[in-house]
Length: 172
Image (cartoon, rainbow, N blue to C red; front, side, top):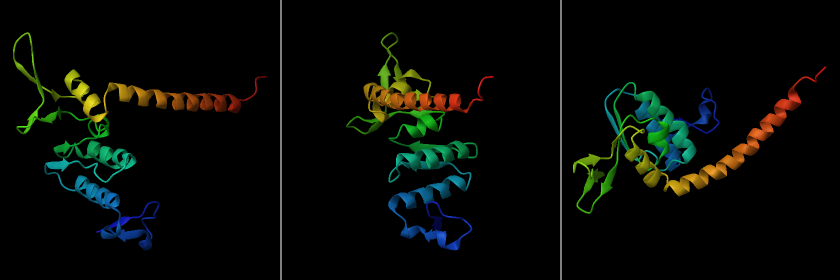
């Protein structure tokens, strides 16, 4: 099995290299791409983000999960928030190690005394809180990143506005 080198031309034979010659991330990306593109049987992926940087997770894993989910059932075990959130998971099941084994995280509803599992779509408040806490590092960490990115985004937006003004035809 060969894969295309970064920036390579698919038509040039020398831009392809054997899978065994790639870095762990390149090998993982090539194998993930293959299994996500071929077949329609159910697929279980255990931490597909291992050995991949965040760009590869977004460009490869998230995109291909979104595309392949229409052809097959895909179950993903992950520690990366980009996968369930940006791949728009239909159902998230939050698991935890209780010391007695891995179980579905749950609460007891005080009003009814019933067990409420942390499972459901991204819109479910328990699921969202778990994703924020476990995968994002907590709400505070998420807000700090958002503030930092927003400062950069504000500068970018201001530059775009300025460029737009400069490109307008002069008023007559």
